[in-house]
Length: 274
Ligand SMILES: [Zn+2]
Image (cartoon, rainbow, N blue to C red):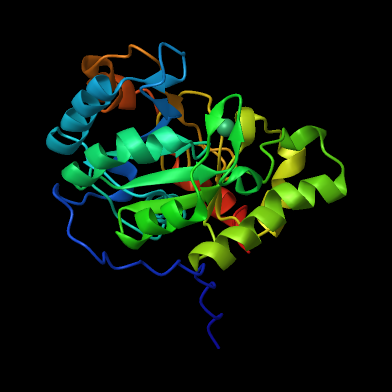
């Protein structure tokens, strides 16, 4: 009797696109991505605040240029080996859920039909602090209901994950996830580490809480297999950053710095398996 054929590894199912993309889809090892990280809008000259004028110019580049805006979930599915995307993609992420997102950025995002993800610290929703006021659940719901806005967990009280004990860590990872699911009807796919604070020791807890992707702020482009799905880099945008800098982030000059490593896909996707 001939020996049985070697087992074929389980190929992950490909997710069919539920929407059309402006640019053609390519083979997964040809796609390069950048996740841009914003915080506040039009709040003086603070380093983490971008003026509405600059943001409008950034959005012009991102919606009309050679890169396509995709959602965080679409990027995670791509990194899991389950989805094809265009050659150059950008994910727009905005952390902290500040009110200036709603009052200043949202009208521009809506006019452009731009997809984006808000990283929300659930324990701060609706609160006012010295740093400003935070969006309410009602406002978040309004954005999510348009289909343009996805919500990621940004912790519960925006604490540095690696330094927490078990019960506080559970609040940051599990409670925040439950609150988003309860208030907005859908559990978040992604965790945005508050303050970018991450170490490999905490990754198993992030995975166990149900997140399929987790994101740091180390400032680098992304390709298939280029990083762990639990430490995907984002690139910060600061006060005064020009539209040409944003165009650079979305161009081959920046995106070409990372190499696809599809041979690591089993490792990276496996690390996100639930
Ligand atoms: Zn933050």
